[in-house]
Length: 387
Picture 1: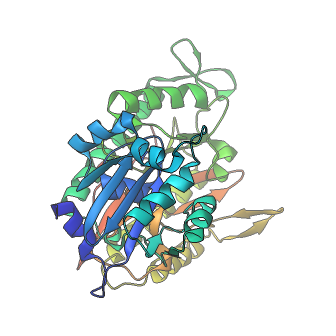
Picture 2: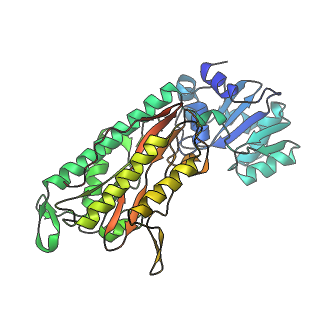
Picture 3: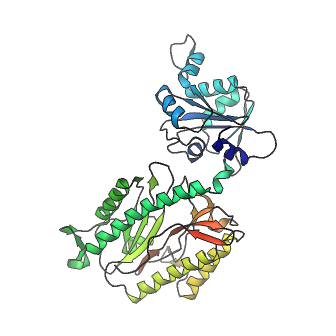
C-alpha cells in the first residue's frame, strides 16, 4: 500500500473496510482529487477495495495517470466498455460500464459521497450492489491538515498575496478625478479594471482566479458582490481574493479593506472594530474551543462599539455572516468555524465583517491552522486602512 493510501486508510474504522467508490472529474471534485492527486477534467472511476485503489480511465488519460496518480491499479475504460457492448452496435451508457466493473471486482457494498450521481446509483443497485452515502466527510483525514498540506496552503496564500499586492499598487498609483472618481493609466479606475489586473497577477504567479471581489462603497455591503463601475476616493473598498493553485488544487483566501485617500471618522471606527474583532478571534482560537463562543464574542464586541446586527429598511446590516470556514481543496470546506469544537490541524479562515449602507462595508480575512494552544497564522499581508 502506498504512503497516501495508508493515510486515507488510517482514517477508517477498525471494522472490515467497506469498499469506497467515486465517479467524478478530479478537476472539480475535491474528494476525488484528494484520493488521486491528479487533475482530470472528465469523470472517471475510483475504487478502494481491501486497501487497494484502482482507477478506471480513458485511453487518453491512463498513461499520464500511471506516472502521476496516487493509485495501485489502472484499468482501461475502453476494455470494460467492449465487454459490456459485445456485438451491439451502440456503445453502452457510462453507468452500465461502472456497474459491470464493480460486478467483476466482486463488490457487494460500497460507500459513495453524498453527491454521487443518482442515475449511476440506480444502475448499480439494479445489479444487486448496495450503496451507502457517507455521513459527514467522505475522507475524514481531510479535516486535519498534514505538514505537506500546510505547505501547499501557504503556497496558495503567497499566490493570493501576489494578487493583493498588485491591487494595492494600482490603487496607490491612482489619482482623484471629477466626482472623486479614481483614475489610473489615463482612464477611470473601475472594479472591472482593477479585478483584471489582480487576476492577471494571480495567473502569472501560477494561480487560477475565481470571482475576485473588488467592491467599493455601498456595493461592499453585499458581501459576495464582485463590484462594478468606477471606484471612488475616500470610500471603503473590499478586496476579497481567493484563487486556486493551478498546480496543487489548494485554495488561498484573503480579504483586506482600504480607503484610497482619507477615511471618515465613521469609516475608521468601522474598520477598527472589524480589526479588533478579528484579533479577538485569533487570540481565542485553539483546540477544544467551541467556535460559536468566538463568534458570539465578536458580535458582542461589535455591539459594544455601536455596530449592532439588525434589519434596517428591509435589509440586514452589521455582522450577518459566519466568522470563518474551512479551507483546503475546496474554498468552503468543513468545518464552519462557528459550528464546531475546534481541533488541532484544522485550516480555517477568520473573517469578521461589518456592513452599513451609507458608511460602507469592511471585512478582514486571514487563514490559520488550529493548534493545541493557539493558532498559526499563515497569511502575511499587512493590514492598513488608508492607501
